[in-house]
Image (tube, rainbow, N blue to C red; front, side, top):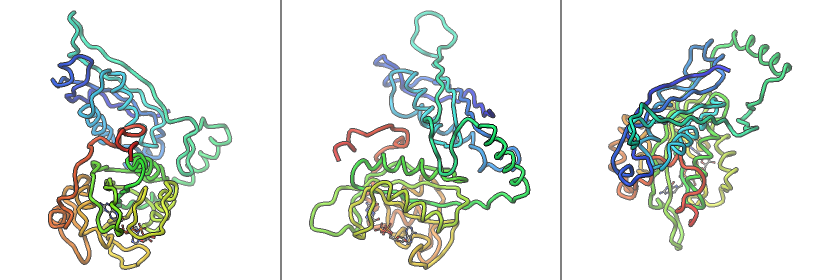
Length: 335
Ligand SMILES: Nc1ncnc2c1ncn2[C@@H]1O[C@H](COP(=O)(O)OP(=O)(O)OP(=O)(O)O)[C@@H](O)[C@H]1O
Ligand SMILES: Nc1nc2c(c(=O)[nH]1)N=C(CO)CN2
């Protein structure tokens, strides 16, 4: 199996059992090996056929700087989880070093190493992670020969807004992101923070729960229309029905921008026709593209539109590392 190795990624964090370790930052150093099939990337010379080691380094640093763990075993698990969100990575070995650990004796380093893999039988779109049989190897070789004469697919950059206000929204959004990333050829290239936002334009006399919103940047070979079809399937998997416009919902995913395309088609309007006046979309968009520009009728710098939007003051940062959480959050569980 091919692999990518990244060593010595370091950052300050507040992990440890002792009281002062909860407040005084100390260095943590991480080595990670990612096992994945690099045969496509080695032929195509295209980043979309592999995983970006810069993105892995970012994820590792975010986890080190993120939520407190008592044990470096737990920190290593959180790092492995964040790496395995990338569907291409089949297995990862993560070592966390804590060179300044509070140990009275002279010591050089202390570290833990864990090895984790995708859940068994994990299936991603049409791609199943399986031990290759002779037949599947022969089929793969055949495909490789065919692929050599094909042009690599054209990749598009899509900005997707995710939101919801019913049930465990952040879990639904994390699962949706994994599903989007798992579609063949897709790669999530940016994930915003999670924001808690006041309901925008939602009708009805009853009080409506706040929404959670986030934005992702996606590199995709799919057309905008194909992507929208997949999005509808993912929304439906999370119990979304489309009965009432702007009603409370478990999961809503909108295509905000698709390579700067402008289209008035009502089935797929681009950019999203209401994005320009929604700080709950514009603010998280800036997290993944700080210099983003909206095209079309309401064109302008997203940073300026976000400030001017009527709900600019109703968008509150909820979590920077929400994507790394596992299971239900206490708060979500009560919703
Ligand atoms: N850019 C777009 N992204 C997603 N859906 C779109 C887009 N443009 C048009 N649509 C169409 O809008 C229809 C309704 O979408 P949806 O149910 O997500 O709307 P909504 O969430 O109630 O309102 P809003 O679009 O204002 O967020 C979809 O069936 C889809 O075909
Ligand atoms: N704060 C907030 N308000 C909304 C949202 C949303 O995601 N966040 N989505 C809506 C319809 O898509 C309507 N109103």
